[in-house]
Length: 351
Image (cartoon, rainbow, N blue to C red; front, side, top):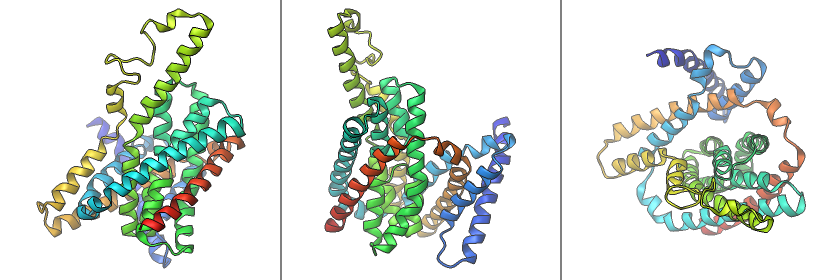
């Protein structure tokens, strides 16, 4: 009860920002209310900050995003997902692999960025933004300053691409399907992907979210792969230095089940709300929900996203983004341009 009472003021702030954004968007034809919500949140958060009494409620915006995604499963046509499934999976694996390799290559050979920072940038760009940065950092035991450096870079691109992508999509005359798949494949974090997709169209938003959730599911595998890589490097260095104590099985990267990173770690890093999305999708498509119920769930999803994006804007600090060095920005920018351009051509050819 105390926790609920503490979150109410912040929830009221999120709702106020969202309602004001809807009012502004309705007064200007063609202006999407989700984009306005984020912009208004950015403006309020950076000019006035978030008062202490509102912080507990404002921080629930990630919960609202996940809730909106779960409920939105009722609006997605299962037959369309099944038809595109193998192709989408192939595109996701290809995009994640290519992005990670390109970022790692640029970071290590062109810009001489510390390898651990490069790995965090690669994971954040290739999989799911700051969540991937944190997950990979936990699997390879990275210094906190490197985490902050990589997270700030990813947030900078999140804040930029959620506005740039819809503009580019309209300028190129992309279809809703092509835009949604492209955004889901190449943008970074789930929130901006969702905002950009639905800012383009309802169909684009659904495709963007489907593809992005598929990408998100790879976070655990990537974390284990990085853990194995850095653990082996550590062992190799220890052998060369004559430090036999590193080979006694007590490495920080070893888990109880003997797998570096561990299956438990894989489960812990997996985004659980994906299961909720799949359950709601199946229940709706198997005919257990009426049209009225599906419509109600769709409306609930819209309101959840409204609260989520209001909080996303309020918690984004522009001064923190400015503190990022130019090298990580160049690495991620070049990689994004290469991968986004290539994948757009592929997606247009396939869809």
